[in-house]
Image 1 (cartoon, rainbow, N blue to C red):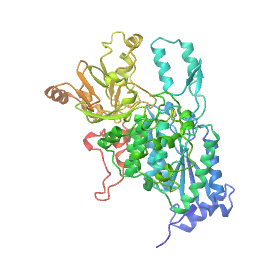
Image 2: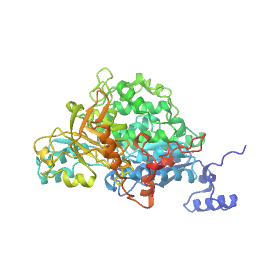
Image 3: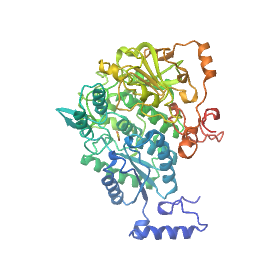
Image 4: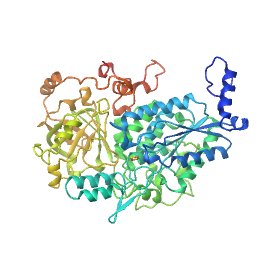
Amino acid sequence: MKSKARGLDGGLTDYGDKEFARFLRRSFARSTGLTSRSLDRPVVGICHTESGFNPCHRHFGDMVEAVARGVTAAGGLPVPFPVISLGEAFLHPTSMVYRNLMAMAVEEMIRAQPMDSVVLLGGCDKTVPALLMGAASADKPAALVVAGPMMTGRHRGERLGACTDCRRFWARYRAGRIEREEIEQVEGRLAVTTGTCAVMGTASSMALVAETLGFVLSGTAAIPAVHADRLRAAEETGALAVSMATEGGPTPSTLITPRSVDNAFQVLLAVSGSTNAVIHLAAIAGRAGIDFDPGRFNDLARATPVTVDLKPVGEGYMEDFHAAGGLDGVLRGIADGLEGGCIDITGRMLSTRLEDPLADPIDHRVIRKADDPVDHQGGLVILHGSLAPDGALLKRAAATPRLLESEGRAVVFSSLEDLATRIDSPDLDVRADDVLVLQNAGPASPSGMPEAGYLPIPRKLAAEGVTDMVRISDARMSGTAFGTIVLHVVPESHLGGPLALVKSGDRIRLSVSSGTIDLLVSNDELERRRRAWRKPGVAHPRGYRSLHSASVLPWTKGCDLDFLRPVSAGSGEHVGRRPATDGDSP
Ligand code: FES
């Protein structure tokens, strides 16, 4: 059998003459000043996401250089290449819509360009999921270096970290408890260095998920962005990528397995991680043909203690977490439930990592032991019921305990625009024990599942001191937000799920102890409303947005696009294709 072409000889451009294609490629490569000796080395692609619109990645120039240094020192040829970058606060309507576009770019550029392995550089919320989704589908040996968290700022004696404290101060400002001058001061003190948000939000959660899956060098996911160790980790990863290139692995398909995905969910639960990370991990697993199982997730949630006390739920910040022992501390705390046979990019098994005699001691004030947890069960729970037949997600750990078993009157907003128009109206008929409901904010809706699930407390209630209410939607919530917030309701309202049928004044019951969320309206009445419901028209008639709204899957399938899921060997169909009747196609 002919051996596969490697290095720059891989995947030659089609001119109908392979030798000419090779000659032309080498000629252009030499135009960069490389000698022919360099061209014969294993090629390590460095897939980076630096962008002026992504301040969290503004140190990636140094990081790319460090990875390249490691590659060169180990005898490889580093070839950096850019892909789409997604800066969380700089995208309309929401970065979530573009995660799959980025994943497509990553997959195709890894596959189309000649590289034997790839080092992925990401960090801001959607970038790590997109990189791993694309890499999983391309399935070339891949390692990840994350941006690392930013450092905290200071304001009047308090530590500040984006973005939990952004929301905390904004809520105070909305309630009239601080003045405009102070909120402007805070604006300049929330994000004071490069790196990802300083709390256990989506970016930090995904960095830990990626390390648990094995894509990140052990002990490096939480190193602060500005720490010299971050550059050392980048250099080491570059060197490792050369051996991954020559050995042909480990590949993403050997790292992403049902057992490593279970481990990653357990870590996410133990750190009380972001609700968004559940979607992203389901998407990454889905690319490897592993379906998300809500029942399994709830079993893991019941069995996994929360051992980390960080904002947005607790007290500390990511720099404290890293100093306290980082992911090692979490893994050791929940070791009994983990599958030790999973490997990482170095080929080392998790069980070997857990027994490392040279590992740093853990500061148990920040990362607790399993027998002295912050909470005896995981911070996230999937609910079902007549309002969410296919599931909804609640971050129990971020909720107000008395609201976890409650019933209230629905106050419905039919869209984001309706919410913006009426939420602060003095005429809004709303009480503190009501349930705020937002419709048409799911993945297939024109808004593309924004982080709008954290509905603001109506101004008149906030001014009375109300800080939390039950809020329900098919939207997402920032990983840095908090409150009694039921998210990701499936089926979504834009596609005619029961959420679309809720009217103001209906009663809704939430019972986290029984795992239910129910709309207390008779079946006959719901059937009458269902017959009267009309599917909204096509919001995006062309381009990527039309592709997205017609093909996006529910969060239980990671909000991936149906045609990007793996093709089933038996039927030749994409696993989990969205039924044609659900589509937005004209
Ligand atoms: Fe980039 Fe939070 S905005 S990680």
